[in-house]
Length: 362
Image (tube, rainbow, N blue to C red; front, side, top):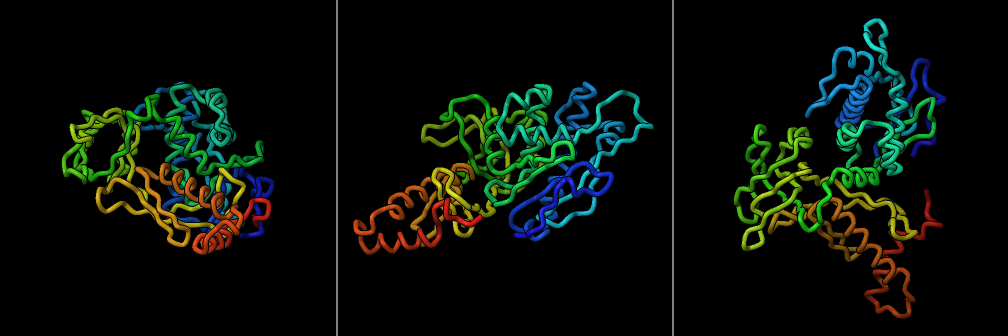
């Protein structure tokens, strides 16, 4: 990792904020073009939501900023700096075209929103945005957060608030829980299938369910329409309340709250949150869809006797952490005299991969 650590005190003249990616490529002053574009576009959309709040304008399914919004709430980016991947930012304010009194320094307010999300502070969020815009802002933030468990974090600091607000996979989990409807867990499920058609008027999409090869009609909530447009890949995952047939297969999904392409990028583990244990080197596991049903994401790692599966990435990640924690406690922490030869070999492999947090390197 680079030894150079840029801060807001080092910003060029005229810039007031610093957005920074850390981890993996970013530690070598690089960023994936697609990831960087998504982050910048997403932040700009959040800025327009702040503009709508300031101007007391209603926001429909899509953000449609006026010319005044585009000028005053534009995010301007400077030349990237060394030290992870850092971009100086400024606000595009043009007072000559303003026809209303609107507060500036929206990047400070965005940093406060990021901070509230990172702290999982619902009360702070409610004080920062009108209730009707909180969910919209969370959906936009969720889109540009680094993919869960890929080993990258995103932070925003400003001259006024130099302590960075860091968004990581924990923020992703918090946002998804906030966006989920208050329904019993046993009434919701995630189904993976092939997208066949979308009816925007009826707010329905149709997928082919691989285990039965039958069509499933899914009625989605208006707020997920943007994600449907961005998820026109095959296969996709749809999460909502379900209706089952006599054989236990889903035949209809209602109140769909999540539509997203199946994410087969690596799951990256650097520590076990339930224990004070860290990996000596990041453990990367590449999920695949199970061949039989095409519904479960699965990973395996023979050296650690690991095999896990889940309907989505969050469930899969939790299952891997649970299994690794059990293996650590049952073998790495065991008295070697109580283990047979095979178990002792597994213990050696575990200790070569992981160590107690107090002795782990940063």
